[in-house]
Each structure stands twice: as C-alpha cells, then as structure tokens.
Image (tube, rainbow, N blue to C red):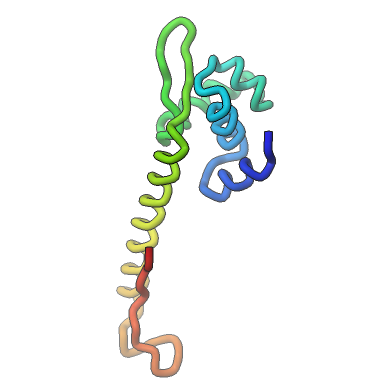
Length: 119
C-alpha cells in the first residue's frame, strides 16, 4: 500500500488505521472484515471497532448479512464531503474570529478589514 495515500488521508482527519482501511476498500470495492484486516495490516481484534467508527463518520457502508461486507464511500463523494465540511468550518471560524476583534483595533497598522474565506 502506498504510504503517501495513507499520509494524505491522515492530513484530512483519518487515523492511520482508518486511512489504511479506506485505501484497501477503494482497491477491493467490498470485502469481509478479515480480508480488510489482512490487506490493511490492521490487527484483527481492532477491525470491527474501527469499521463501525468509519461508518459513523461516513467513510464506509456496512452490508449486513452472512458474511457482513464493508465497502467504502466513493472517493469523489468523500472528497466533496470533506471539502464542504472544511469550508463550513473555515467560514465559521473566520466569523468567530472577526467577532472577537473589533474593526477599529486591527492587528496591523491601518488594517481594518475582516477575515474572508475564498473557495
């Protein structure tokens, strides 16, 4: 598995094990927990807990049955969701920071502009 993709997913908020699991699921499309654990190098006792947590975060879907299968959210959808959430957080943070600092008391000489977030 490419170390770079794991590192990049971690920068986006994934844990190390979540990043490995997501990358494996992109490759396998859907798989049993045992297959995911083996391919991702994640200890088998941890795999179900991590996969359930990833489902709550919206990274994977669980297909209940015999056996239970797991599949990942499409990468394009995941990236869109992460980008949208990040921009919302960034805009909220800018608004909150602007509310903390009165316009007349800017940080740099003559600066009276508010923080603005560009997409």
